Length: 417
Length: 164
Image (cartoon, rainbow over all chains, first blue to last red):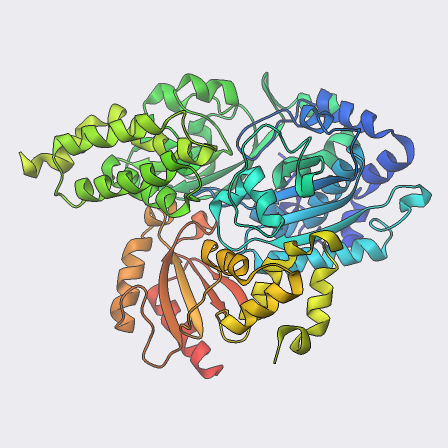
């Protein structure tokens, strides 16, 4: 299959402006600005059934249509704060096909009548930010960014902004706080950013992969896009495959590809010829899937993965083999969420702290079955009570780990009995 | 010398990215600028930034405290930050870090006696398919080092040393 996002795999020089242009680059943006109304662009994206690729899977065109047209200015922010353990797809796009992403951002900005857009990158992406700055300057010089684009009234500036190492800033309201120069702590919603966003103005926030789809949808049409993927999950997705597989990496595949195809055909199977025990399809935030043949043959789309008691999320598929104990996995994920909890709401701040204490005790062999029960109780008490999804995410591996792999926890605490 | 005097061009360029009435947004890029030379933000720089942005020094300090890539204490010239999160750990990151400690004769969080490298364990760096991996945070910014072994890392440290 020819890639539509990771196009550098076929066209290695696509990050050069001349090469990108020769391969159809900026035609979609020019066509949108000169021949389409902003609402027509939004309608086209809506009818493509594109859904947000950051994890939530919210319909992209619908999100664009929420932007309040009574208040101006509008802002667009590209969420490039990719920090979920297991996710490394946006990074490959930005490093290798940055112009397609920037064109997608430009089209989204036109569609919601924004004249300023920011790319919020995770602080570690220092070199990527420098590359984007270079590409933005090239686009300005070539007349794809700046004032009166293509001889119209429309003007657009794009700026990069580096975060500084905080997973929580991937949450869109925390990201806005951070971009405003504050600590990255989520806001209470509503109001949603479409009404009250950056600097209190209507703001659209989209993930890098989502935006990178947009030029291709405008160029080839909604029907072309919908023809790929499955019913509720149109198009292609970049699956970040990691863990105990022979060939970890990004695989751009249509939605509906099965776990077995991803892990065995593309990923080369499991290391040391072992078998798969657990799949975490949405990174560290996943509910753990107990793997059997039926699971391996399940198509990876939003609805099908839900039938397995999990979520596809950002499709960061962490594969865990039968040499690994689930109590160790839980210890690892809790360590992550405890570190990344922003401290604003009590259930998450205190809950992740206590979950870390208890899981450390269990994992070090000093726990009893009562500790496992207590850990489960703490996680369940947090659910539905946190200000933002981070707190909720922190409980996923705990609850599903204990409920679906009780034997691993029994073994971890057996020395106590 | 104050930040504005020393880096007047950079400060101006940073401020131009944000609406003048929302210049507080510039606090993060200004902190990176302040930390460029010594690897940490000192009190004078925080006062400078507060003055430039017309916010309090406490507000600036709260940003330094919240984000992990800002530091308010001097460490080694390079911070070597090894990812030990789940996907990396499934590919040997914990053992890698332990062996590195053994080779360098320091514990996680400590600095080599020559002041060159501070070894740290950090959370996900979005390089799960290329573990073991780490980033170096130093005077030349942040750089990724992927698919690493202890031998390759020791070679890198030698190269950093001779780059002094």
